[in-house]
Image 1 (cartoon, rainbow, N blue to C red):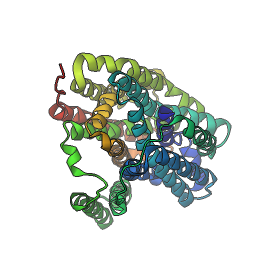
Image 2: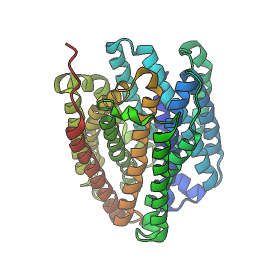
Image 3: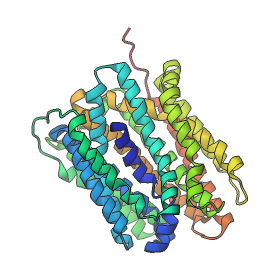
Image 4: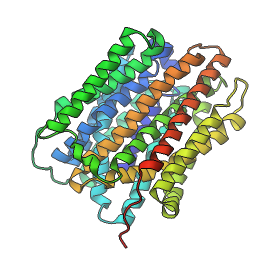
Length: 452
């Protein structure tokens, strides 16, 4: 159930991918604003994860896990029933808020169940880790099936029966645990960090439209910096902060979270623009486009469950992380050679598999390190931080690469050559991010002390 929850909350970031062209036509999205169907979810998800982790520690993981599914269910209904852009984005944001409660609570429950046995914990983390990118890629396939043979609102309605089933099963399967001593919930901190992240992404997404030198762009960016600075100040001085800043002094915790930020910033743009290339350049319809990405899902699951633990045993935490990010960067560079008359077998499949292998090798060691480095009583906070890192990286990475793609021709719908140039530029940008992640991980990650 815990791995399934992770699969679902990540699937909700990607299941809309194949449906975007039809949503754009039905709801009236402008091309430069279409990525907000993704970003509305990810900003709410990433911005509220720290609050979700704190609530999990204070009120109990099982309770917050259940509340999260109720919120996700409500958001799914609103998004599926939407008849205009505003309602759609509101539903997506509500879905993200529900996921922000589910994800850290699920990780806390995982450590409650398996944390006392390192061997079992490694297996559990491998399955949990595989559920994230597998959910992202499988979402593309399911979105294709639903969009092609039913209708796009059902990419949201599918969550409703799943949420009801999980809510019915939670009381009999999940450990209740005990809430921590009551403390003040830092709502102002949650508001400032979410507002700061939203402002940063909004500024980057709108910059190609209004201009990078426009007063609006810089004004919103300055507002983002101010809000995030206020958040850090609140955390430094608050009696019950949302994030105890001292937690980042734990060995490898900050380094592992930086790796997760850059991993998300490279991987999600790859998925987003690869899907658009298949549909808008190669002419795939919804179902074939989703099916084309299934090999990545299979390799990611195999890589995380089977290969990543073996690579970590031989090369260690740093070796697996750095090697994975290098392979991801290489796969993205390979994808940048796409052309308007390309083919799936030559231009997409081998490069996407190389990138998926890199993702699978880098994700597990950084995830496990980021959580296990914290004190046991701060498991929910550590879970919220690492989930936030990945989601914030995803949102900002996609926002920046959307701007890069638009500047290089991706805003010219109906022109395969221009679209390909834009998508190729986005792949190069994502490759640079992954390569930077490899260099930073090599410089900052430290081998754990031997216990022998």
